[in-house]
Amino acid sequence: MAFSLTWLPDVLKDAGLKVSLVDGWQTRGRGDAGQIFGVICHHTGVNNPHKLNMPTLRSLKEGRQASPGLAALPGPLAQLGLGRDGTYFIIAAGRAIHAGQGSFKGQLNGNSNFIGIEAENGGNPQTDPWPEIQLDAYHRGVAAILEHLNKDHTFCCGHKEYALPKGRKDDPDLDMNNFRASVAAILSGTIPAPTLIPAVEPAPPAGGPAPRPTLRRPAKGELVKKVQMKVGVNADGNFGPKTEAAVRAFQKEHGLIPDGIVGPKTWKALDAV
Ligand SMILES: [Zn+2]
Image 1 (cartoon, rainbow, N blue to C red):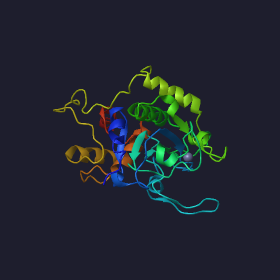
Image 2: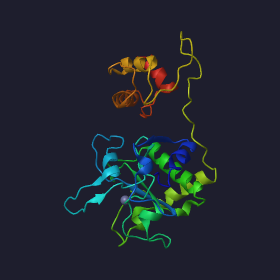
Image 3: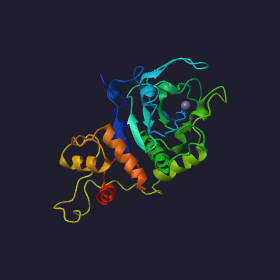
Image 4: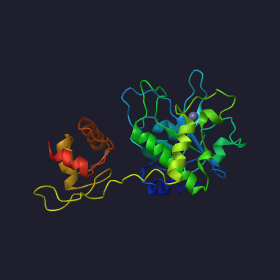
């Protein structure tokens, strides 16, 4: 049976955020979550030299093995993963092992009473600065969840603020007062909603019969083949992970946001090659 946090994807999508459902998310959890009091923000702390989008997804889902200085932890390790491109990965609708011992506003059971978000970031501002698109999605996602819970911005905290004894955790590498100020601005409507990628191009391409749809995983068909030929992957008409990676690389090269989604701007750039 599904656990209780099945509202997460819709709440995030309604806020204009990109959402990716991880197989089995609805029934994943160390039991069900309790009454949700707020959100604890984390970063993954894994240094990934290639800056892949969400390399920790598997361990967030399945847990981690014991290693020197770290005990093994059963998964899931968060309900939500936040990729570097601002995509929310919905990992679990139940309870997650993300908080450990701590206290925030008198709440002592972080795992049962807080939603955990693990944002992909190595924790070193020199080598791993937060992409603007990820930070914006972090603020907006937390705001959307708190709004759904009928709570204000003061009900999100950093793991470093919650964890006891003090200093046990240093994540996330963000000023949480600034973070809450941004969440408050979104909740009060001071920051406008993001512009969503339109579902089709505003006009047909030059010489083309009709505006092209925005394509992303798992789209299929002739237009996907066209994209695949342009980005140099096997043109089988299935928009899968390899095509997505090639689209991201293409977008990076052309100064576009590397979200792996072929919308109007990416179509235009593809037309030019
Ligand atoms: Zn943490």
